[in-house]
Length: 439
Image 1 (cartoon, one colour):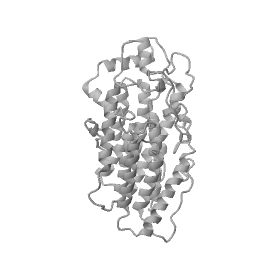
Image 2 (cartoon, helix red, strand yellow; image 1 turned 45 degrees about the horizontal axis):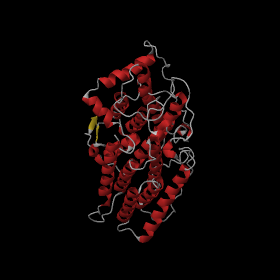
Image 3 (spheres, helix red, strand yellow; image 1 turned 30 degrees about the horizontal axis):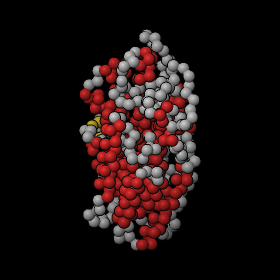
Image 4 (cartoon, one colour; image 1 turned 120 degrees about the horizontal axis):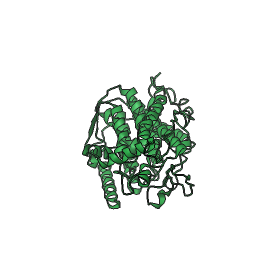
């Protein structure tokens, strides 16, 4: 397994270099829509090459970068409303000086460049080189045919917006991730129902980011705002609901169809091998925005909302996970049903209930449905370059339900975690959809 991961990671790094190191055919002036998509495209690649970027950490970065991009855009659009005062702790941002000219593309590019550099300051040498190359190329393209004083003013202003957002980010409780998110000291809760390590990796003998659920939220009041009922009572009795749900996982994995295996792998989105689950939904949005030629106002709006929804989803989900601290299917099945059973996917190193995939997919689906409409059909080609075929969906909720169900096929979640995670995500989506971005 280590060899497979190493080869895939190396191939991805090589692809990253080839994608962004090639010089542009000519220094054509880019539209703000192109600048925004280019920076997001790079960030999706950086996420998969920065070791600290577990799904909650990635979601946090997407949220802050989304807010920076949105504020850079809305500051030059009279019909757009700032998110200051709507998001927890976000104070009024710097204003443009009246009567002076600014270039909106340069403002946006500077905000994204400054934000990306800050959030990925710990990425590897290859990522650093590619990020510097992207910044130089994008900056030059954005400034084509723009007077020097406007370039300087616009870039300075975009950087000021990013610095304001970055200062805000430092106070949320999630700015420092030590030991890749695994606490060096952590007391496991005694009792058969509670989480136990499922990996032999030394680092993963404690669970990932146990305090993440107490981080400051964005649109939610706090991490407990969308709480769930408890999971079924733990029991080893064969007539119990808990045993029935464990047996469902066991039987499902033993009888998987090729389609179910494909679904599990398509939505697996493992860290360091993908843009992570929140990045997958960002990718879906980017594909639609490019396909439909959406303008920058819409693009910045929906990308900010998805980032905020995903970040709040992981805070809310992690709050619930560590409240109930439930064991994973593999632990229960080995103990009670079959000690030789193995899931299709590697079990993540943290408590089971609810499913993070379900919660964040439900939040993303709620936001995307509100923005684009019900029964909005689309094709998701996120993993085509990784050798996985694109999949088609009749709606965002259809995709979210498949993403949630994929965790049953993978053998890493019980039914209650899957279904109630979607409920939690839908609740979080309501709070994000209530944000006002139009005057």
